[in-house]
Image 1 (tube, helix red, strand yellow):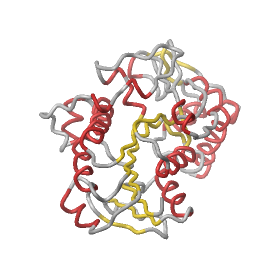
Image 2: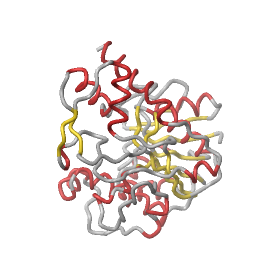
Image 3: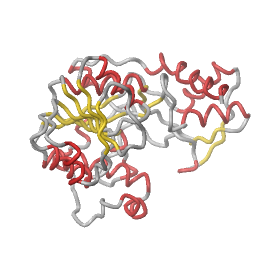
Image 4: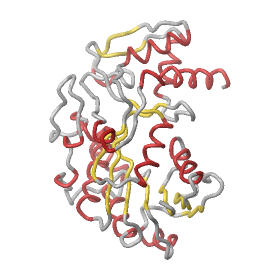
Amino acid sequence: MNNVCVIGGSRYFGVRLIELLRDAGARVTVINRGSAPPPPGVTHLVADRDDAERLGAALGDRGFDAVIDQVCYTPYQAAIACRVFAGRTPRYVMTSTMEVYDPATSGLITPAVPGVPVTEEAVDPASWPIPSEQPWHDPRRMADVLGEATSYAEGKRQAEAVFAGESAFEFVTVRTAHVLGIAAWDFTRRLGHYVERILAGHPVDVHRDRFPTSFINDEEIADLLFWTAGAGYAGAVNACSHGELDVTDLCDAIAAETGRAADYRLVDGAEASPFSFDRYYAMDNGRAARLGYAFSTAADWLPKAVAAVIDLRKGA
């Protein structure tokens, strides 16, 4: 793994991934639209990944040992990548999401049985349908048609399906759990939502019946993507720390750091706070573990993630 291309990676754990590759001695090429410079010591190409002609022109005659795609959200983008990177790389890694397993976004997905974490086989990219009439070239339109959550999850599922069916290279999809920051600012601000409400004495909106989900931290997902780029496996792999957490686990960790306990308010449906789920929503990381990746335990690093958010709030 001497020559790696990263598409996106201008923020959050993508920056750490680029630094890991660079510091390991790889020649790193970063492609983005120029919205943010990459870390020093890498090659920076400015191109819109939605424009096949300009993307190809920016790449020139470059080839890579592996490509890590941090920002593929639609089958339209996946189809462009299949065309542009055919013959340029033997290995392509897509950063996907655990949202592909969410039954709330597709009637084709069987809800997980409580206590039985979902495995990669629950969504098979090779057999997932790709309706030709959907206007994925216009993500805003798709969000209006499907709704934001469904558009995101279905876009990832169909992107995986395009790579699985059309690519001329070995394809890996890394289905990432909910990412919390311990080394970098968590731009989703979801954990910060809880910290702010608890410190302000405001109630936290949760479901009456609360189910756990899976998490991973920014350092660990960057490290796993780094490992995946040079590994020898293909197909889907779940990326999550050991141990499930529910919304009360998050709030208990905040209480331990702040001395302020959460006041819960029971709500229904989408009104609940982020990470409060009314359905079982956890992944099985057994495949990656069997392939040789050693995961941490979420409960061990959660206090560090909470402390990072609190320190950021103090410095604001």
